[in-house]
Structures are given as C-alpha cells and as structure tokens.
Length: 188
Image (tube, rainbow, N blue to C red):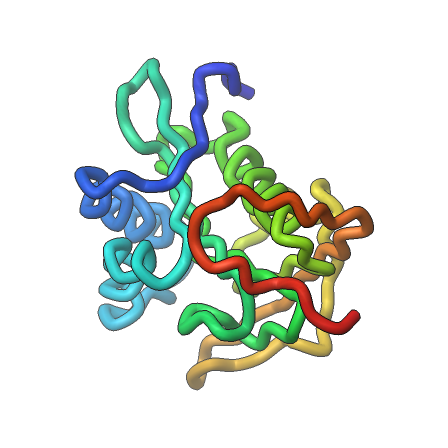
C-alpha cells in the first residue's frame, strides 16, 4: 500500500479530461479477457461528456504530478449515466486506476470520495455495477461495506453481464456544499 497522503481526490480539471479518459480505457484494457468493445472504449474515453452530465473525480499524486485514477459519481436516476437507480440513490461508474499504480489505495480513495458525496447529498444508498471478472474491485467494494444486490443485475448487451452492488448509507448528511445537481433525497 502506498502513501495515501500524497493522493488528492478532486473534480477533474479541463486540462485533464483527455488523460483521464485514456487512463480509464487503459485500466479496462488491462483486465483479463477480450471484453472491451470499441464502442464502450470510446464511451470510457469521453470524460468531457461525463464531466458535463455527472461528477467526474480524479486521483492526482504530487509524486507523479499526474492523474492516477478516475471515477464517475452519478447523483441520481435523472442522470444520463444512471444504471437502474431508484429515487434516493446515487451511483458510481467507470472506476479506473492506472495499472502501474494499483494496490496503493487509489481506488479506495476514489470510492470513499463518492461515498462522502452521496452522504453529503442525503442519499439513502450508493449503487454500482461491475463485471464478473473485476474480482479485485469486488473485494474493494465488499471491504467498504457494499453487498451484492442481485435484484439489479442486468445484461446491457449480449455477452455482457453486470453484477450489482449496493451500499446502504445509514447516516446520510444533508449539508451539501458540493457543486452540481444534488439529485438524491426522495422517499425512503
């Protein structure tokens, strides 16, 4: 585990959009199996669009002076990036960590930042989808308290099965000072 004191998680900056997209594509290409279609790779690379329609966070290190991780926080079901979200839920998508920087707590720092955003917005749960072969990510999610939520597993296209994970936020906060659309609060 590396020194997390040198990792800063923050909103992506305009000058980082391209690099963040390349990083996410690289992270997905490093996974086992031939699972990344050209169409999905283009979607992963388009961080500029995601940053306009959701909250894109990056992990930046002073040591490398570069972006080493990226994640998309989806504030609620009204977002074009929502995958099967219900009222009161936020989501996370497209977590990617530079393959040479893995196992240093960067993915955890990014997911923790999304958990805090969801709590700050008063969300009751945080949802995500992952593939069966993303086993390292499954372990991270489970360590952070996410549990399998098979009721929302789905197949967005033939041959691509997605597993759902859910984190119930027992103590949501409603003192949001975050920019962007606060989408979460709704009927419990």
